[in-house]
Image 1: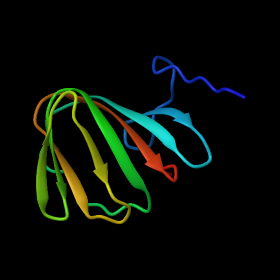
Image 2 (image 1 turned 120 degrees about the vertical axis):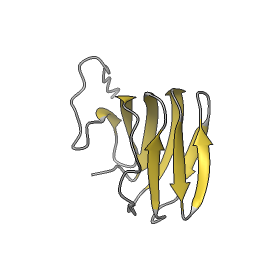
Image 3 (image 1 turned 180 degrees about the vertical axis):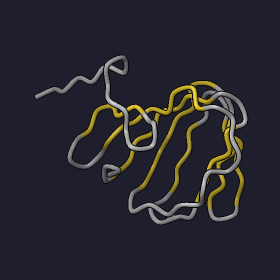
Length: 102
């Protein structure tokens, strides 16, 4: 059975993200028009995250390595890796997490 989730009507997640399609082993979410900010708190998550930048720029810091993210870039944060993001310009990106983020 196919499940469709429209970004226009999708609910908000606990951190302000747009909760998109979700299955048993993978889930998608969108960070839409995130304002520039200082580093978010460092985090370690029990899931792997891949993402794709639609608009804006951000820095991703993973285990002390800083990577610039720009439109068209994709990234991976391994499960359990300490990481944070610094939004440099209004930022929109899609992420998928496996297993689904809770």
